[in-house]
Image 1 (cartoon, helix red, strand yellow):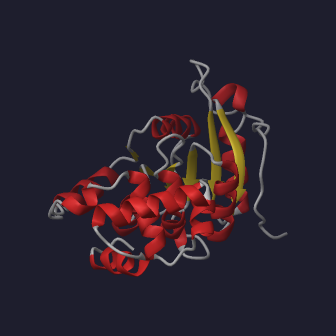
Image 2 (cartoon, rainbow, N blue to C red; image 1 turned 60 degrees about the vertical axis):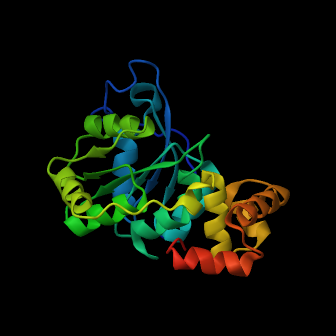
Length: 245
């Protein structure tokens, strides 16, 4: 049986009961599971997906990068549990293609990496890509539910010792210089700028960011005015020179 993109309602818990104690305050969080192993997704769904007990509602699943982007865009979950190694480019590619959803100020989609790997390069790669945390598959159901809620609230969450990889990586990186031109742009204008520089048409940008074509045109005009550029070709060169693409 092939792994197809799925949209789900709450699942039944396992025979020995779901993770407990996460929903004491009546909290709810909508989650998408992204992993290329169906049996693992089924196990996680059974462990955390009994909403009345855990507060977690699993609203979709995906087995590769294209499926993941499709179901995340369609369901707009609050948290995505993301495997690092996926067909189609891996978890980092999912993060790259979902960057506009992560940047949404009103309804951000947040990512928590859930992987068997504890390799430093995997951890650092997805954190640089925008994930809010990284836990390994040895985590208990109760701790996973707690981690999901913490990520939903904007916290950074790591399994023991993995945080050290991130601290070391970022401590050894020189702080980027302040770019006064870029600082003139709003977050939404930066998102539009990046997509324009990647060659997206206005209609494609509107679809990616869930805004109208007219709004895209307004943002482009604002970016050109603030950066004192004349057209999208100059804008693309400007963004490429700053490695924003």
